[in-house]
Amino acid sequence: MSSFTKFRKNRRSERSDAGARHAYTADNGLEREETIQLREVVSVDEDGNEVVTTVPVVSGKFQFLLDDGSVVTRSYTTDERGHLVWQGTDLPQAPAPQPVYQ
Image (cartoon, rainbow, N blue to C red; front, side, top):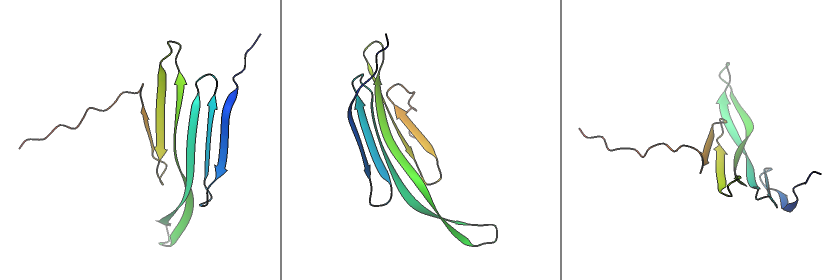
Protein backbone atom coordinates (compact mmCIF):
# COMPACT_ATOMS: atom_id res chain seq x y z
CA MET A 1 0.00 0.00 0.00
CA SER A 2 1.45 3.37 -0.94
CA SER A 3 0.92 6.63 0.85
CA PHE A 4 0.65 9.98 -0.85
CA THR A 5 1.72 13.36 0.39
CA LYS A 6 -1.09 15.87 0.70
CA PHE A 7 -0.68 19.56 0.05
CA ARG A 8 -1.90 21.73 2.91
CA LYS A 9 -1.39 25.03 1.08
CA ASN A 10 -0.85 25.80 -2.58
CA ARG A 11 -0.75 29.42 -3.71
CA ARG A 12 -0.02 30.88 -7.14
CA SER A 13 -0.23 34.46 -8.25
CA GLU A 14 0.84 36.56 -11.17
CA ARG A 15 2.79 39.73 -10.59
CA SER A 16 2.17 43.10 -12.22
CA ASP A 17 5.61 42.88 -13.91
CA ALA A 18 4.50 39.67 -15.75
CA GLY A 19 6.40 37.52 -13.27
CA ALA A 20 4.88 35.00 -10.91
CA ARG A 21 4.98 33.77 -7.34
CA HIS A 22 4.09 30.34 -6.05
CA ALA A 23 4.33 28.53 -2.76
CA TYR A 24 3.19 25.26 -1.29
CA THR A 25 3.34 23.34 1.96
CA ALA A 26 2.91 19.58 2.22
CA ASP A 27 2.01 17.38 5.17
CA ASN A 28 5.44 15.67 5.05
CA GLY A 29 7.31 18.87 5.99
CA LEU A 30 8.18 19.92 2.45
CA GLU A 31 7.79 23.65 1.82
CA ARG A 32 8.68 25.68 -1.24
CA GLU A 33 8.37 29.33 -2.23
CA GLU A 34 9.55 30.93 -5.47
CA THR A 35 9.31 34.35 -7.12
CA ILE A 36 10.03 35.01 -10.78
CA GLN A 37 10.58 38.57 -11.97
CA LEU A 38 11.05 39.54 -15.59
CA ARG A 39 13.77 42.09 -16.29
CA GLU A 40 14.95 43.74 -19.46
CA VAL A 41 18.64 43.33 -20.23
CA VAL A 42 20.40 45.44 -22.83
CA SER A 43 23.24 43.84 -24.76
CA VAL A 44 25.12 44.63 -27.96
CA ASP A 45 25.00 42.26 -30.92
CA GLU A 46 27.91 41.53 -33.26
CA ASP A 47 26.92 44.47 -35.50
CA GLY A 48 27.07 46.91 -32.59
CA ASN A 49 23.30 47.28 -32.24
CA GLU A 50 21.68 47.36 -28.83
CA VAL A 51 19.35 44.44 -28.23
CA VAL A 52 16.80 44.36 -25.41
CA THR A 53 15.93 40.90 -24.09
CA THR A 54 13.51 40.01 -21.31
CA VAL A 55 14.96 37.43 -18.92
CA PRO A 56 13.63 35.75 -15.77
CA VAL A 57 15.28 36.45 -12.42
CA VAL A 58 14.36 33.77 -9.90
CA SER A 59 14.62 33.60 -6.11
CA GLY A 60 13.22 31.05 -3.76
CA LYS A 61 13.65 28.71 -0.87
CA PHE A 62 12.56 25.26 0.15
CA GLN A 63 12.85 22.99 3.14
CA PHE A 64 12.50 19.29 3.77
CA LEU A 65 12.82 16.86 6.66
CA LEU A 66 15.58 14.29 6.96
CA ASP A 67 14.98 10.82 8.38
CA ASP A 68 16.41 11.94 11.74
CA GLY A 69 13.78 14.70 11.97
CA SER A 70 16.14 17.60 11.27
CA VAL A 71 15.08 20.27 8.80
CA VAL A 72 17.19 21.24 5.78
CA THR A 73 16.57 24.70 4.35
CA ARG A 74 17.99 25.92 1.05
CA SER A 75 17.62 29.21 -0.78
CA TYR A 76 18.62 30.20 -4.27
CA THR A 77 18.79 33.27 -6.47
CA THR A 78 19.66 33.93 -10.09
CA ASP A 79 20.67 37.19 -11.68
CA GLU A 80 20.04 38.62 -15.14
CA ARG A 81 22.87 36.52 -16.59
CA GLY A 82 21.59 33.25 -15.12
CA HIS A 83 24.23 33.04 -12.39
CA LEU A 84 22.83 30.77 -9.67
CA VAL A 85 23.74 31.09 -5.99
CA TRP A 86 22.76 28.41 -3.46
CA GLN A 87 22.74 28.69 0.31
CA GLY A 88 21.66 25.98 2.69
CA THR A 89 21.87 24.70 6.21
CA ASP A 90 23.39 21.47 4.88
CA LEU A 91 25.81 23.05 2.38
CA PRO A 92 29.42 23.98 3.17
CA GLN A 93 29.92 27.65 3.95
CA ALA A 94 32.87 29.68 2.75
CA PRO A 95 35.12 30.88 5.56
CA ALA A 96 34.73 34.48 6.66
CA PRO A 97 37.13 36.89 4.94
CA GLN A 98 40.29 37.51 6.91
CA PRO A 99 41.98 40.91 7.17
CA VAL A 100 45.02 41.44 4.98
CA TYR A 101 47.94 43.03 6.81
CA GLN A 102 50.54 45.00 4.90
